[in-house]
Image (cartoon, rainbow, N blue to C red; front, side):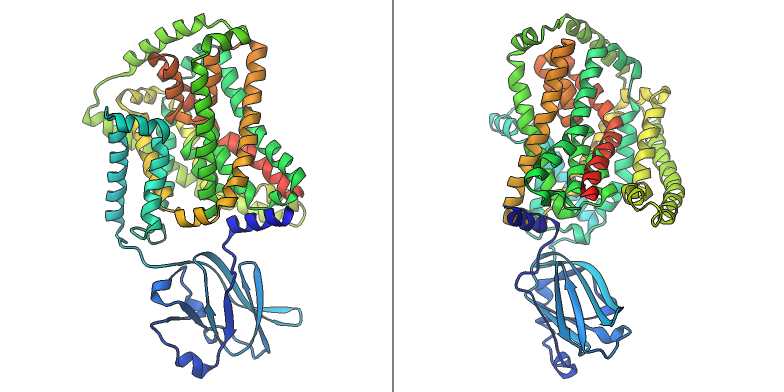
Length: 548
């Protein structure tokens, strides 16, 4: 069982080089290679991306490096170490598609001479479209089609989106384009732009309309259930990881907790926080793709249970001994809140909103560029004296970490000013647009064929997700029973975390359409605490991994 699990985990982290053939060749053989079937490169010019269509084999000229006349060369390819005779020329055959890491070095006693250390991808063929302007246009067209059909009154689409969430299509339609070679994230800078500029702007805009007083008026039980849901996720992740590790310690592999951290980000804050966790903790694209499937599958199963529960609202409230008369009062307050905030946007309003959000992210970039190097230097200085502290606090040296933190903080701070009134002209809608562009660029990084080939990974990871969500549900049920909270607060508090702004209003509207804004309001609070809660969860999971 343990060996089988280890193989599954390794397949997630990297594509293993089964069947790969690496050998040294003579100078004459190197010069005689067929350039149509072999890609010939110098070791100091190894690209980050190879296409099989440019040549099925890769030949490397090591003489471009400081080369020593030693009898052996060692090639550390992914998780395999190969030793070949020294000639100065290598040829690699049978390289499988996917991500690879390769280190080539020589050894003279205890001294190591590194000739090459490179991480790269090997893909079947070049994409049909490489121009980012064209790719961006295609992504916008896909998003427009998804949300146009979702809002359609056509019976087929109503049934379809009742089963398949629009968010899932936003991931998978770009993924299909990537899988079948129409576009490629490896040839595009769109994800970098979206994650470094649109993501921080989205965080600012989504946090801008936080109404602390309005949240307080929802009553203590609503907030108690919201934070109970958050705590259930923060604690549930490490508990689920620890429980499974009792059966198979291999799950404490250094990469797995990084992927689970992205799930924590999604389940507390949403897609923006999920991507933030990916960047902060460095989860690989393959692992992140697997975690998206786990996230969407488990979250939607749980959401369907909550929606099913709304049909038994009175019976569940009777079980909790809860008085839901306050819900009616809450409906009236939220209708008044909607009318107060809504207004027609002018050109000046929109210009001020855009200027405010991008000024905030500009300042966030500026401060992160100052703080992250200082923290990194400090972590290096304590590496020898406090190695555990240095490892656990590594993420605090990430510039992206501070970018996300400052963007979130600026959004919260602005919510205490008149800037909160920008919600009336659609601040959160603009933030959501940025978020969905980001989601589409994330989808570009998926390769569906690789996901299908590694289906065993998902069966394992989904079981972890189900344990995690069960712990979350138990927290909610126990606390709701203790404080006699209405099921409305349980369901919306949970989805404000698990589903965010995309599904919390749906669950709230299942009780009453006028209550949908309550879901949005609590979901916005989720954006504010999501990053910090996910970091706390990731910190505990990282501790389990490091301690093991």
